Image (cartoon, rainbow, N blue to C red; front, side):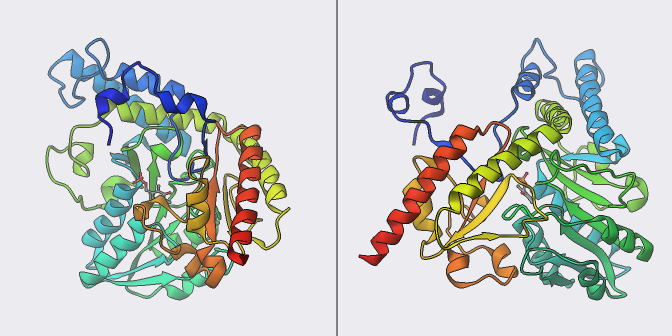
Length: 405
Ligand SMILES: *Cc1c(COP(=O)(O)O)cnc(C)c1O
């Protein structure tokens, strides 16, 4: 363990300079922040800037802080094409998912106690739904096809007269597979069933227009689009009419839906990061497409390589790959000082467990236990991808030879 103050001291550390810098291929777990977002954040921390409590409206300090929080809310709303007052700031997508699902379950249980979601959701959705099962709700966990996709038919067949909410993610965090939401959203709207979407992996990477797509609740997380960790938001369509029940009670902030002093610095940085991601959407996408092409071509030099998730319907920044006869944990550990890759999601806190997402897709055996996720982004260079690809190929070959000895 190192002490925080030595971490921030100016003396350069001995070890890192002589070694080549490790390559970060875990952008789906979190992204580094955009520099402009960091600068905006710093401006909201000290006496010279907008450090005040945005709820302290008795003085100018608080008023100015409130003003920039509201500007941030407005800016995010403009990009999503929704009303600013339908956005509730939270601590991230885990909290947004909890608030959306538990909040709707609590406030609409008189109408019915059935929820539909999928077996390939993020744990923050799965575990929330499992908790609700323990509280007397019934949950249907849809299974995606072998490529990770759901059809409108799958969703419709799961609905009952008791269904109040459907919760599905837009882009899967392990495979990058994109779920087409338009027709599902339309069909649910016609039936008067609320639709929640976890957009943590798609926000800033795919266009989302809430004026066109009838999504009722949408979860975002800033640290997946170059903002800071610990902040996100939940969109609640017609917030007043939807009557979402809060999970926390307190000072009345965020329309009473999420009390607690707002983290001005994180919120402002999130709005800036989101705007940059929106402006650079096409450029970032093309950049990732190019990196993905290079990496796929390199990995294809190996035998027994298998890509998981529908290649025609995925984001290019996430690549989920299984190597025949190579365990994911062995590969990740062997590469850990040079290339940072992951198996499944970061959320199972270090435990190397087989991916529930791939399992839900019907993937098993070697292909399941050998699956690794490589994810990259705006700051990943071609040179890094080439180097990482070479290292991965060499390590897979070495591990396979070891197994033969
Ligand atoms: C990262 C992630 C989350 C959790 O977001 P936090 O802000 O870290 O709580 C939820 N869903 C998906 C799809 C994610 O990728």
